[in-house]
Length: 125
Image (tube, rainbow, N blue to C red):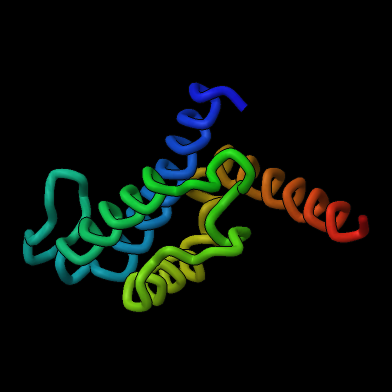
């Protein structure tokens, strides 16, 4: 895979995570919206920290060429606290992405299915 393709893939993954964190923050931290403690990205401080952390993890991922998304990765590089937070975001936002970002959600589903099929074929050999 070319370096430019890897960078595009990395940016798509970061964008998808950003969409999910923004949706989670808007729907779960609405009391912070009312108090005005939201930054220019539309996130509360806690969600902004998670988004930055997820971006750094994605930037440093050595497996970007061969994996689709972090959920399919053998190595989980998030620390325990952040892993818990991102799981909560994914559990909440995942099912709702079809309504808020349908194209990105469909792309994510198709990519995940392809990756699972590829992994199954590899394990058969």
